[in-house]
Length: 192
Image 1: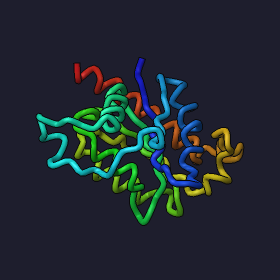
Image 2: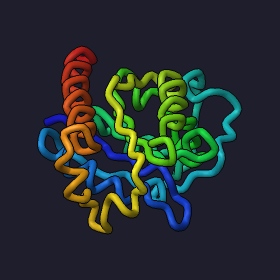
Image 3: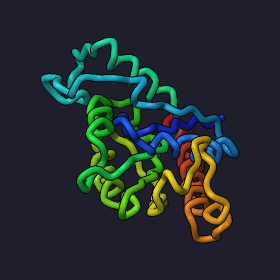
Image 4: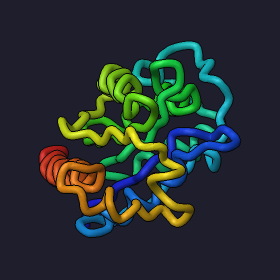
């Protein structure tokens, strides 16, 4: 079965990105195996390796980084749940991506953003950065413009009026997950 990771892209105190994870995971679970990866569980120093991981055959990552890389490599696809900070993704998410060598190579990524513009600029910067680690972003994305703390409860359940809106975030998430699982299946077959 296809394995998908939902990555919580913020570690700050008072974050709300972690509320998105169970909501996303519930949708992914309908068609794939899913696991939530919280970057709080993968603390890494700022990227400071001498050369790009993709070009370093002698690379010896620290144990903290190796834990992250080994976990990321287990999956066929990913959903990145990101806030928008200063018109971009969070620094901790970018740092986690900077450590990637080939673990996400030729694997699809769906993007779920939140913020005043639905995380649109964070999603745009991720679409620029992810090809650098060989990942493929699916065309569909979720732009959550509503305040996450008001739209999703502590258990990760979307408000009924948003869930039932045929043009709302639940419909967007369903489309993004369907595309992600399709690409994950197709690309897994192509990689073998």
